[in-house]
Each structure stands twice: as C-alpha cells, then as structure tokens.
Image (cartoon, rainbow, N blue to C red; front, side, top):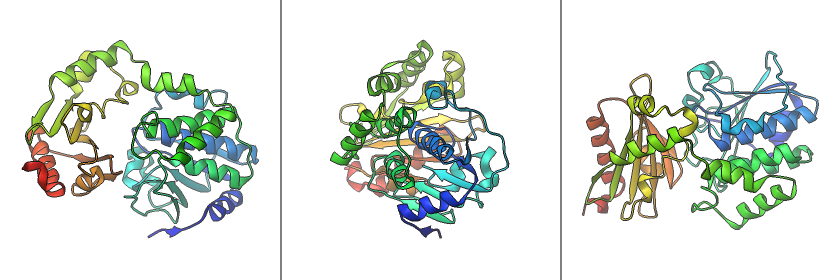
Length: 321
C-alpha cells in the first residue's frame, strides 16, 4: 500500500530529488504525456535533471510537447509515475521500475497502490489537473510549452470537454492554461479533427465489423493486426477509435478490442450513464473510470467476447432484460 500524501508533501519530495525519471503508461495518451512533459519542464526550471520515459514509441502528434527540450542522459535516483494506475501499465520496457516508484501522481479511482507515495485525486478529470496545482506548489510559473502540455492532458481525457467527468473547475483550469499561452484551437484540431487517410481506412474496416449483443445494447468493435497492416495505420492513428461503438444510438456499453503483437487483446470499454465501465473491467482484472476503462485479455475473439458479455451482465443485470 502507498502512503497517501498532499500536494505540499509531493512538492517537497520532488524538490529533494536531483535526477528524476518521469514514467508514463504504455500506449501513451495526451494526459500521461502532457502531465509528464509539463513536470519535466518544470523540474528543469528548478535546476533538476529530468527526463520522460515510456515503454512505447511516442506518437508524433504530440511532438510539440518535447520540441526544443534537450535530451538529458543520466542514471535516475528518483522515479515518479504520472497517470499510471497500475504498475503493469508501465509496460515491458519499464517493468524494472515497477517496485522502484517513489512517487505516483494519478487521478484514477481504480488506482492500484504500488508506489512508495501516492498523490491521488479521483475527482479530477485528468492527471494534468493535479499537475497544474503541483506546479503552483513547486513555485513554477506555467509558461506556454507547459500550458500546451497540460491543456492537451485535460482536453484529451475529457473528450474535448464532452465527458461526464467535466466540472466547472475543469473549464476554469483550461481557461487559466489558455491565459498562460496554451494554443487551445490548434491542440483541439490536432487531437480531435485531423485524421490520416490510413486512420480513415482503419476506421472503415473496424466499423464495418461491429457486432451487437443484448438487444443491441452492447457493441463490440475489433481491430486486428491484419487491419493495421492493410490500412497502413500507425499507433498514432489509434487514439479516438475507442469511443466509436458507444456513440451508436441505443448502445449502453461499447467495447473496442485491439489485437496486440503478442496475441493478447487490449480492451477499451466506454459507457453512458447506464453502466460503470470501471466495474465491468474490474471484474476482468482491469480498471479505469466510470465512463472509460480497460483491461487486457487472452484467448480467441469469441472467448474474449463471451468474457466481456458475462462481466457486463454481472455488472449491469438489467442489460439482459
């Protein structure tokens, strides 16, 4: 179990460290990367050595986060994980840090305590919101590059401010980041409007293969390695696909199954107010938020779908009525 700490205690711990590795989760998204690079920039202004580590390649669409950020190569004496709800989400290439994380900063209600100390606020829509407050606690003035990183984290984890996790405070923080120089229009366009031709081809394949269950209240979308190959889609093209099944009229629970290179499937669940995605995925060893959660399953597609349907029926009995 982690020791739960305050913003002040987390800031004190970071001030005491000199060479800091900032760890992100595998399949990185805007929140884990935005939080990490904002913290990295902030720590460097304090005279620290800091670098961001990730098991997977960083998507090019986020390259403005590390633009003009010099590479620092050093042996870290402190590891801080951001937006990583479970040590296993660090991924294979960062697995050696799993039992060496001194501080974790996160907003997932289903967080599995693995770090020595934990700064957690499950009421916030994004870890980037915690990071705004932490930078204030550190006494770091948020400049434009930091604001771009943090705005991205908030925007992506709220679906461009559409999800139920958005509160008045979410908007106030985003507005403050805009006042600090965040390029809100450009970021929202890059995150939500621009699609490559390969992404459109992949989306067409995936949508054409959606299957429905429980009187069409559950929709399952499959993305295979073969689809990725045929479409020419890259990892960058994956973001934003998971919500599609849930956007279909009448669907309570939408699942996206992504085949991984090791043969397992990464499952992303999206729900409306009829169901809690974190409860469904929690029954299968995963976790997340009420409206967006995930897990990893092995087996054939039919076996995995059966598992998902069983968990859904257990978590939401009336879906079978």
